[in-house]
Length: 519
Image (cartoon, rainbow, N blue to C red; front, side):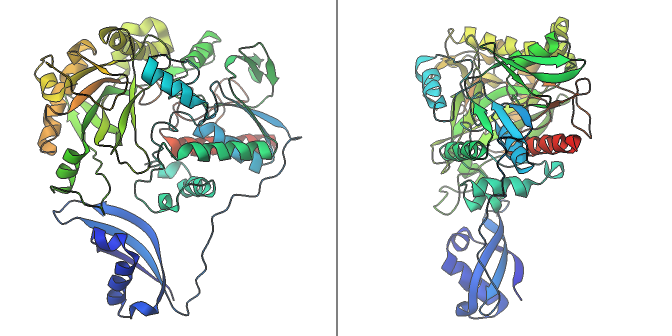
């Protein structure tokens, strides 16, 4: 009978199949030749001690024991070209996985995406990086694949209770992702590999009768007697259907404004905001692995820190080992940062959002905007950063210790942020209470991670799109909007998800609820 074991091994053993077989043969007291196959179920790093270990969960098959290599395959999809139509607004993970689920359930998705296809987006990313030109419909946040496609493809989620995480990971594998994402504790696809997977998902939707429309921005939602009738696009075209999944992402401010204008219930939601800090990856490795040299068998080290400062949570967010910082503005006249890593995480720098949790009371200066108060708070900081950085996509920047000492940095070394930096005292970017918490928080971070607080680390501001500043309320069971029948707020933009996996799960759940309602 196959044996399942939990074990700790050195990075060298974990990385070498022959060494691992030798190690396991001694553990179970058989010769290495008796081991037919080893399946790794889970893998994680334990860096708590100076001698770093790899935690493995494995199944060992000996000769004569039944073993068959399993291939993960896609569900059986049916042709839905003549089936009942469901409009899906947004081609991020929530929208794409909703569309796949609708097809599996025998319904026809019409996916409406304001931005370009995943390949076409690249020209607009180049334009914002090199020429400081922001395309409001095609950028790091908008376009096929959503914000995660060109900002890392992290798949880690704490939302285990929200749905079937394994199903989403297996679907991604079936569409071409490495099977490693099923094993790693913190799975990650990488910005260089995710576009092909997104493209294959879209082609599958079209192959089985769904529609995907790019460069198509929704300018109105048609509602009659509190029931959805369809949408209107920027060209004045109407697309009619009485089921609508709204999966527009956390930066679709025009959609929030449209809902507010039409008096469709939305509400302000707290989010987190701060800076993006960049260190050398070598320094982070030395801190996290307690070593002078990481070696070839360990991945670039990540980090995660959480502190309570003046009654607020301050924490690392979307940490990117071996990654770069990207300009993520969605409108001219604002500066926004985010980070990403390629699949190998082989860049020389590490970066992470360092953010502070906000409260609804922080939005009081913008109370006249009602449910959009958080949006306006967010805008005010992003626009201030744009002015301070010379009205370009250059980013306000400061050395970390200089920031804690309220001192403008005499110079800023070249960072991974391609548009460039402008030396600014960061206190000018944020309200006073946020600046003070950040200053004190970085000192606390330095106590937890010796060497983290250094003037070689550069802060870039702001990191402001951590989650949606709006929630679109829905029924907890049916997932329908509380006020509008047939409207299904979905994913990050609706305030019900936080990342690729949780958004994909939410998209599937909305599709399932629509199918259930049609029964």
